[in-house]
Image (cartoon, rainbow, N blue to C red; front, side, top):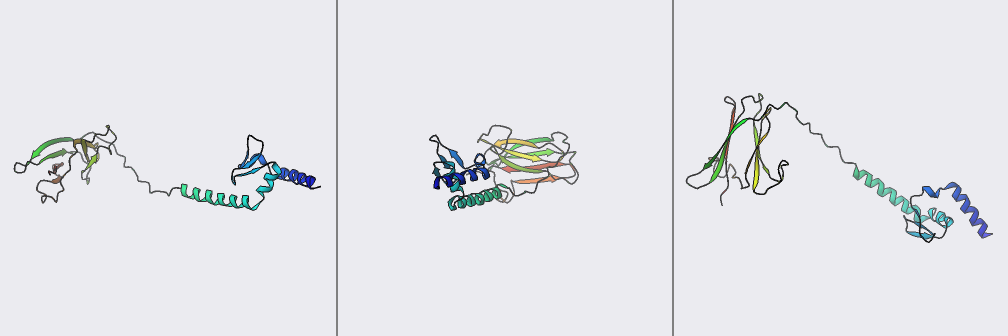
Length: 198
């Protein structure tokens, strides 16, 4: 009587629940069933179905659903403000002159750069910055060098490879040796920097 009742319940459960669609059922090499969610072992489908209706399985399902919900919220990256890239027709490289300079009294070395920008866009002021060898993507990184970048619209950005020595701040010597100047009349951007000596 007990066996027929179990068999009847098993058949009824199999009619309502499709085990092929259950992601947590696993049939092992011995023929028994495993619940991968709860890590339990079952001898037949009826035992597994009874387990799926039990408190342990239902609690683990709720935990998994909560964790999946939390993970899906973490995966959605916050929308960043998209930075509009400026697109303009580049007219070529500007003319430039690089001169090595040296302070006779202290022996400090540096460079003076003059960039000629006769067709610079009105209202644009040239910009410069130093870039490490690992930041640039044009050449294999070499720790012996750094790059000096000069940009002015509509010209192409130009870069100078210089020794990877520390550059003095403009405040180090009162700005006497380190300076920059943009002359809008002659359209020439000039600047000088000195390497730090220890």
